[in-house]
Each structure stands twice: as structure tokens, then as C-alpha cells.
Length: 585
Image (tube, rainbow, N blue to C red; front, top):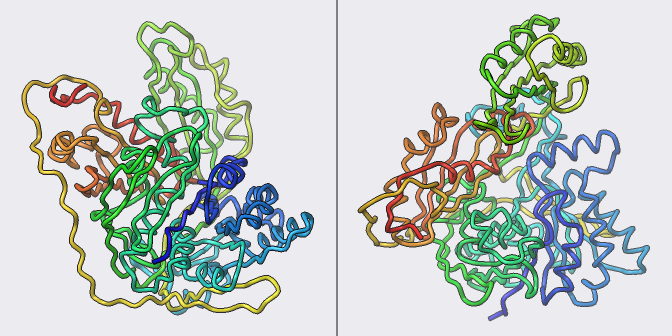
């Protein structure tokens, strides 16, 4: 039996802490260094970068990190696996090779490609093989597409490691694949080791967002030590797929049942966590604390994955103009009404001339304000249209010219007038896995091909039962829901997910009984008219909700204050609820 493999994370997003790679390589023993740079929005950002600078559609910060740690990784035998290749994994590999040459080092560098479907659009559309993920209808028009990348699995990474690569760079893989790949390579798993693969995928899901597993973005952060400088996590994956999540000693933050549960709920849907390598069943996860800052995940079961791969498509959505005006003191509603009327009177266009017009009053003002800021609310108006000129300078000028001619205390937010700015729209799709093979290229060698086809035998999964405690009754007290319960939320394209978790069996019993879909809509009026799915995960004392359409056409197009739904869970926790006194501290 092989020893467990310790896989460390050094990046949770494009822009994460630059020193994290060095911290993880030098802070304690690890076998593999991984980092996740990609999200739907990141692919759009990289596409725009590539338009200006061809062959630069990758995360340059990863190359900088390699300059920091490449020598140490080679000395210690640490493999590096990252999806920082983005839209140009070959360009990223060349950039890393250039750094190696400058340092006088000679790593074996490989990259995995095949995810970029943009050159194949005409072929896929003609064959009705590109299907919209939500509607199930074939996509017919790719003229506005900026990116189209299939989410690849782990087996290209496994092949690259089998070929002796020290550094493996991928394009758009799933976030978990960069962890699952090294684990499958190390333990020699085959493609039907469902439970082991599922365990590694769940481990990858927990550490892929870096410090979100060690106290970052954690509801109960006030209980966590060292939050000023939180350490990054590692996952020690055993041959059966069971995993210990931990962090290096001396680093800030913590690894606890709470922090791991919170991250398990991030950007998920139902109990079936679909991926290209395995469907991991989140309703089978079991957790136990096994030491200081160490939590073991075990009992995780897996099923065959879908026969299709998910595709991340970003297309040009048009242009937008977002304007904000302060509404201060008394008569907030009347002031907002006048600003809107005066704006349209000054604007060279009418509301019907734009593709979309959205207005909102954000009530941040307080009664008897003690500061100018406490006296202020905001009127927000967002205009979108395919015509850049229509949302350009003339429109923003129309708002600015109201400064002395409308409400008392007029102040605009965001500087002076300006032109419209482009925005992208995210569309999820799927393609047959059989037509998207992975290509593995070791620099200096010929490419090898790895199939994305996975066997699909029948597999029976038994969900893990949850606690049997009864929901407490008795007297209640009206307090914020977050007094007892934690939450984690995020974006899923145009949808948002909101996970809520309890930290005791009795609290879970009450939560499961109380927080219905109807109650959630009551607590979050913004969701009242939306389709909302509710999923229970009793074994980890959690509920997950998917709010369809909350983020409109995706992060880059959303006009709500929090376009990524990162704070949605904290909003829910702030709502007052009649909680049983038996649960309160």
C-alpha cells in the first residue's frame, strides 16, 4: 500500500497571494504543489488580455511563483500541477521554460490541451453537438463567442506525470482535477475506482479555493486565531481516497469541522457533484477531527460521471453604463424619483431605446445619522445595449448635468462622466466527452492523446444518514440566524448557491425543519420570484440552495451589488429569526 500523498494549494483565484507558493514549499513537507487560477470570469479576463497581447492568455503570476520556488521543488522532488495555462497552456509552458533557463534549471515541463473548442465551433454546431446546459437546446450561433472551453478531467495530468513531468500546466480543467490527477498517479488508480476518485475530487474541492478551507470567508471568523494572515491548506490523500485536510504549523487560521464544512458547500448544487472523472456523492461525506488543524474526510462514495463534458462559454454581451447617485438625509424615495425623472429628461434616449434598464434604491441610510455616511442611500441605474455609443459619454453627461438642477445634496459616485464599457455573458453548455480527447505535450516531445471516455457500469450508492437528534422546542428569542448557523455562498454562472450549516446535531434538526424554500424566499426577498432548489446533506448537517437567475447572465453581466453572490450567505445570517433559547449560547 502506497503512503498518502500530500498535495498543497498555493492559489485559489487569479490574483491570490503571490508568496503562497514559497510558503507552502518552505513551510512544511509536501509532495505536490497545486494552484487554481481559473473561473468563468477569469476566462473572460484572459480572453481580453489575449486580444491585446497574443500568446498571453495565461496567468503570469504563476510564472512568477515558479521563479520563486522552482529550484526548491526540484531539490525536494515536489511536483507542480496548475491550471494557470488558461487559454494558452502552451504559452504558459514556454514562459516557465524560459524562467527555468534563466535560473539554470532543467525541469521536465508538460502541458495538457484539448479543452479549447473555439476553433471547432462550426463543426460542433453543424453536428448539433454543442448543447446549452440549462435549456437542452442546440447552440446555433457562435459569432459572438470569446471563449469556449470544455472542463477536462484528471487523466491528462496522470499521463503527464507518468511521462516524468516535474511541472504540469493545464488549460480549463475542473478545479478538483489538479488534485485528483496527482492522487490517481501516485496511487495507480484506474478509471473505475469510483470511491477513491470521489474522495480525491472532494479533497480537491475543499482546497481549490486556498484559504477558504483554513478560515478565510468563514462565518465564525471571530473564533479563528491568526486571521490577519491565514495559511494555505494541504490535502493528504490515502490510497482509498480518504483525506486529511490540514495546514502548515505556525500559519494563521484553522482547519476544523466548521471550516471544512463551509468550503464543502461552496458553489455546489445537489448531492451529486458531477465531474468528468467521477460523480462524487456529497451525501456520503463523513468528517472527523483527528488532531490540531486536521480534519479527516472519509466514507465518500462515487458514481460514473456524465457522458458529456461541461463547456464554459463567454460571449460579448454588449456595453453598459452604471451610474450611482447619493441620496442623503430626508425624502429618500422622493429624491430617487426626481433623479430618475430628471435623468430621462436630459438623456438623448428614452428607456425603450436600450436593451435593458435597471434601477434600484439601496437604503444604507440610518435614522438620526451620526455621520454624513450614515445619512446616505444610493440611487443606481444600469443601462445595457449592443451599441457602445448609446451607453457612452452622452448618457453619463446627462446624469452629471443634474448636479445643480435636481435634488439637494446631489453627489455622484465613481468620478466624472465616461464612456460605456464592454461586458461579457456566460453561457454553460455540454459536449459529448468522446469527441474531446486530451493532448499531453512534454516540451521537446511529440503529443500523446488521452481519451475523455469513462466506463459507465451500474453503481449503487447509499447516502450516509445524518444525526437523529430532535429539534428543540420551548421558549424562543429573536436574534440573527447567524448567531448559531454558518453559511457559504457563491456563483454558478447566472445562478447562485447558498449553503447553510449547523455545528450541533440539535441545531441541524431545527434548521432542517425550519429553513424551507418558502422560508428562504421570505428571508431573502430578492429570491421571492426565482426558482429555488433545496438540497439536504444531513451527514454534514447542511442545506444547500440554488437560486436560479439571481446573477442574471453571469458575473460579468450582473448589476446587483454583489455580482458573485459571495455575501449572500452573510445577508441570510443577518436576518432576525425566532431561535429556540435551548440552542443559544
